[in-house]
Amino acid sequence: QVQLVESGGGLVQPGGSLRLSCAASRSIFSAYAMAWYRQAPGKQRELVAAITSGGMTNYPDSVKGRFTISRDNAKNTVYLQMTSLRPEDTAVYYCNVPGIKGAWGQGTQVTVSS
Image (cartoon, rainbow, N blue to C red; front, top):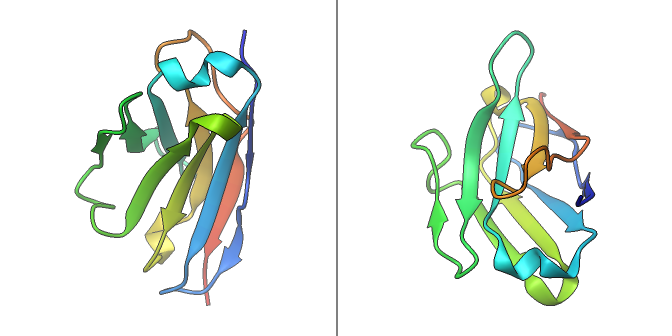
């Protein structure tokens, strides 16, 4: 199994930026696609960004142009740079390895509020 530990969440004003990090416990990290999801209260968990092992990225329209996913295979870490944050971005953000069943982090809270 792989352990994922997210960090970097917090409270930010609308228009602000945050960078989330997700550190994976296994050195095979580089072989897998990685993804970030979020879940707001009362809503389903939704994909916000994904990156393949080769570095190709994918975003839903809701965050395209504002969020950037990247990875550092040497550090077994994936990042989510979030800019121009909006109140509707408020959620718990989770790191996920789509190719490993049950590979989810514990989540990190992001709150966008003035």
